[in-house]
Length: 255
Ligand code: 13P
Image (cartoon, rainbow, N blue to C red; front, side, top):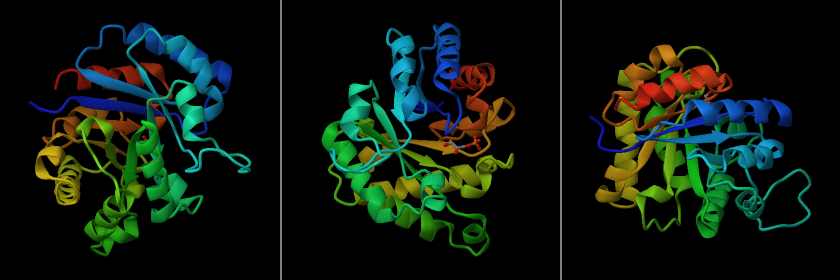
């Protein structure tokens, strides 16, 4: 039995037009009506958030943004602010996803500014960390993940473990169909928890949710989620199909 409540996120990335997002949200609302033991978060593209919120407002399903800028407002064409996300109904914000880091060149320093803005505004960050295949193969997983966690959380004052989620997403497992083995995930999550204990304290670290992300699907969800230190999943591809996403949530309900 896991003593932490699991959190399952569906990261839709740059998929689903507003009308497709509305259909998916309607399906989730119906299918997830009886979920009690798991927190469910959907992360639609920014343009879909308001309409998804409209569908989900009377459900327990929460909404996350996928990215945001660290300034309150300004001349930043193409960006969205924390205030905009909050006003649209977001409770969480994904920060430092590997696609932001590796495709768009987001740095640890920028990730940290976003995390600090999330805390300042009351959005709960889902801070993503994870090593590339080269970094793993050269024995640098802990250096990289440890650096990302410490840099991402620099200057954060955490009063409650519910204010923060960390997602361990090894880059080599994202969208590849090759998930981390349960042992690899458990080992990385234990390491992250140790770093979090060092940054804050061990009782906070004990309660913080650390999700696993990278090719999670109904067929491998159970073996990953049953690990003591795996407190949920952040799901890309399999979250696009409400059927698959709900199957994973139902598996999570058992822990
Ligand atoms: P996949 O589930 O498609 O591998 O994506 C994981 C991910 O990046 C979630 O944020």
